[in-house]
Image (tube, rainbow, N blue to C red):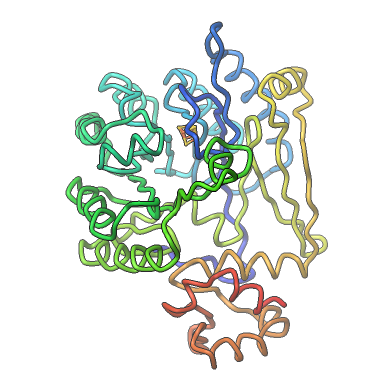
Length: 391
Ligand code: SF4
């Protein structure tokens, strides 16, 4: 896999574009999603707003190396006309630059995009798809409130290959109440059979203010018990590894060289410029060794009005001083199987705690490589390890 940037290396830049519209809201989802009304989606206006925001924000990145990735997330950005996506790609390339062969990803839902739509995305310059397959069990998909079927999943992968995509990431949702270990592994086998370059597996999470959250509040059990979650998690990693799809992060696995360039930026504390309603960005502040994280205005209508007026709105901004940034580096870097690159600042801040975690079998320090990495046991209690490391 691509090694994390060594400490002190100039941060790489990626661009994230949020497209908030979905055909229908899934009952477990707490993303910034808008279900369009009868007037439909304001796609052209949204494109113009993103382009206007880019024109303003690009001024904050003068003379820096071109971006290594461009990621269209959502929402369901594959619903955006490919011509709008092409316009954004061209504008990012013109204003910030994109490295030759930059990873350009669009999230899509099987059953919501046809062969012509996939060909149009490929022609627009998109070279990677992240497909919300989620399961290959029709009953489970229905329980999750998904619109796609197992056949949609297979047809979409076939059509994507026919359209020329050689980099596909497929998602699975696991740890759903009632899903046995055998059923979870059948899903993994179904994904593997489609030959993806990348697989993301997520435990079903219950968020407040969602329909699943309301059901959980009424006492309904929607997620698997903890023992099953651990069994499924470990067995999934083993099955993917056996298929040549190597786990490289807590929730992600890839064939060699196909790790997600864009997502790696999050885990290595590189930089990402956020465009679109509710998008999150991060950049370093070289002056004080800290950084700043921000979230754009979430409301799509207000976002568009402000961006089109040349004043893209920020809903929240968080300054991280150098100490807070060390905590973030530990939290994100330990997610990677390759581990967290350790420099003098991390060693001085957390070295004694790391030694205690190592003695308990949760962390391995590799002084030769200058990395700390989780053990299998540590990976199951990541949050606890990070809390104790940074405590
Ligand atoms: S399609 Fe994805 S983003 Fe849209 S509501 Fe469902 S889970 Fe959320």
